[in-house]
Length: 227
Image (tube, rainbow, N blue to C red; front, side):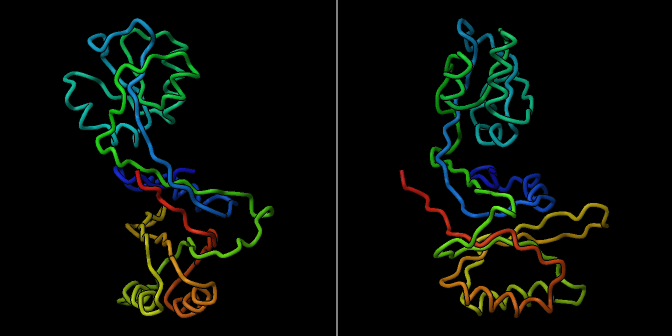
């Protein structure tokens, strides 16, 4: 499951899905993303009036899209599904933003290649399994969890200080709105550590300052391969 992009940032709806799910993170993968403008064969750039894609893909290509005056941007649930619909409906005035593979699968033409704003464009994906199928990951050095701080003053600062003093790298701290509350948030944290005992000890230390702690998984951190 995609969770964040180096250009467009965190995918907040997926954090909420993770919170509600019965899934466990067992790994992560960083993929280099290349976005293409796809259209049906015979359709030219001047024919395009609207562009369909996932909102994150649209954000990744915003510099190019804003350079094309008058295009209507339509958000969809998936990049590949956008390409599929463009092909199935034989659109003559619409394009999709998706991958070269999507163009091949749905018989579309790459109208303009590599339209993403930053060429160093990576998306982080989580590897998930159902809880009953999860097993301890050997040499784990990263963990993801969600927690709510208690209502005492400075509780979040105490949690962050404890993590830092324990030698753990807090590589991600994402606030997520709590549905039905008045501007209250839970916090999704990604922690990187050298050994599991280090992480376990810190979890015990922060427990007095937190509530509703949910551990999503303990796994090996992914590697971004330089281009």
